[in-house]
Length: 235
Image 1 (tube, rainbow, N blue to C red):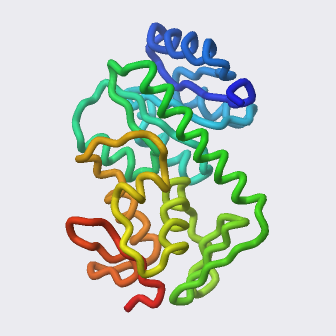
Image 2 (cartoon, rainbow, N blue to C red):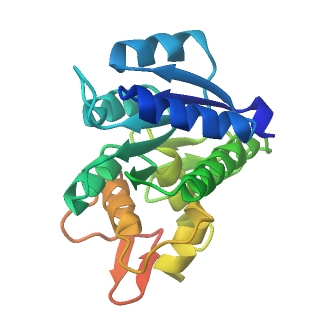
Image 3 (cartoon, rainbow, N blue to C red):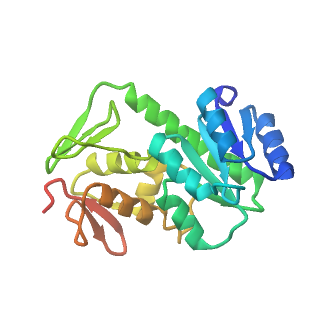
């Protein structure tokens, strides 16, 4: 499948860019490159792209701004690649809609696994969109898994990232059940996660905001020390 999948590498360092291109081309992926945000938008407009490897420290618009803008327009897979080590940068990237985050210097094999897993997730999403209509309703909300649409009680559409969509599907398919963080991680990704990874907590908080949850959530309820429970009646 990799020969049909297109990765856009957005990296201003020519050495790092060349290394990434050589490695992923060797693995059979079709690769395009960009040195900045302007070139990134040009490539995306002219070529169907499955995943963006996006450096944070770019000239002009940085990777955070580009992630925010890209996520508003598309559900494309986004992996941030950066030399920054701070946990807060990782959390900000995830909050803005990135699907994953890799720090330099990275292990090429690990990066390949993350790319493959994210592409597998986006492929599953496309497969879901081809299935017969399945609709879940809760407290006036409606989730259409054929069209991948979340509709508010008053009929408005709420955009979801790949991870948010897969997370919400995991919840609505098992209402009332406590889902551990490990189970939720498995639902959104098949890669191994470190025990202190806060990705699920970040995604749940994003999803709560999109569902209009207040400081005391009633739909996505925290089960302390375990995970989360989805209560479709908001009790």
